[in-house]
Image 1 (tube, helix red, strand yellow):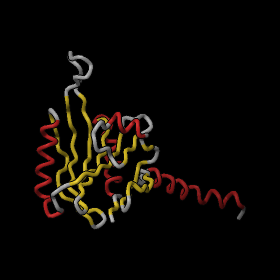
Image 2 (image 1 turned 30 degrees about the vertical axis):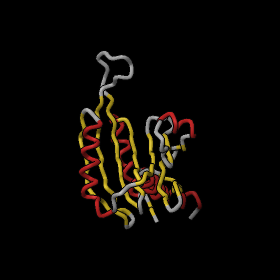
Image 3 (image 1 turned 60 degrees about the vertical axis):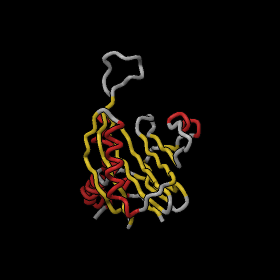
Image 4 (image 1 turned 180 degrees about the vertical axis):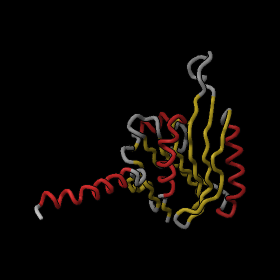
Length: 189
């Protein structure tokens, strides 16, 4: 058998392989966020520089890490703050954070609210689409801002870790599987 006919015998297999790779799920790059904390960051996302973090998160306690899509409209952040709660309080934390989110936004549609185990660690998980009025540009009848968000909370020692993925709501179908894969990749030791 000549080499050309052998090649054409494998063409269907190559097509199947490329097809499977196209639907294999979002590409994530394993990234060390802090000591004993790694997670998958979506391909193409880049760390925000310090001045970008300061502008987007003007709080006293800055996030451990912030990653943004190339166009800057999609973000992944990890923050840490002291807490008096323990991992035995997750049921109560789920209620507290759900109520806090409902108070923060004009309208919230929860897609998921539970306690989920990832890599042998429990997380409080809140996935939702939020809507707020856009009052930044001086009023008028401006369209509301809608965002898809997936937020996970975990307690390690006396620290609360918050993992947040946000994207425009009109791109939810594209980013929801990426957000879920990134959150499922979290490893805390």
